[in-house]
Image (tube, rainbow, N blue to C red; front, side, top):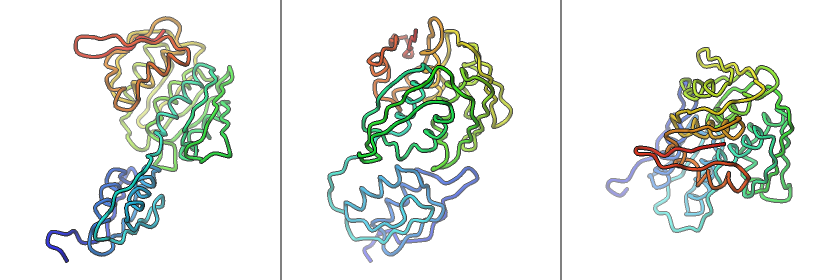
Length: 290
């Protein structure tokens, strides 16, 4: 073959906490132009991998098994241009669903990747939140209406690789469950230290107790506004949601994390009737949620 061309190989991408999503994306992309056949075992099954595979296929790649734990890629000599619409962000959609849950709200999400959110909507339904979708539309681009009742029921949640419950929605669900009628159990199996939001929620009056990879959330009647610190992207979203439901003013420092995963979240929440504003600070942005 051509000098410097990659050669197909058998690659195992599993690990103690599941498979690597970005690793799968990278190896799959590289393999499309490699000489021969590449087999990825324990490939990530996330919908974003399927989406990337569909893009590559539309460019001329030969990929089988996207969305399953075994991917087979037959190398081709070149890829061509394509016109492709990337799927919507399922974590963003799930976050707004949690916003409806924590505020007893009623929101409609357009272009919602409902088909990629079944683990999340399953838990929401157990919590007493109604999620109805337009069955006639593409299940990855449908319209979902999310309506929450006054009482949130407690649930058990364990984060897992897709199609299990996504670790990227763990913090947002925890926020909603702080107001549930009873005790919820949240276990983190992907990033076992991903609980920086626990201490901040307790500043707001939540009863959250961590033991290793598990947090017990004992529902309270109300959250109280407080100054809190956003330590990472999903913790930021969690605290914004908690602030929406809390009595009084919540000031969230370091919300610059938020912009990595949400497009103008403060503006979108204002359109839904939230009282939230972004205040510039010397080093970092701050959101004020009332």
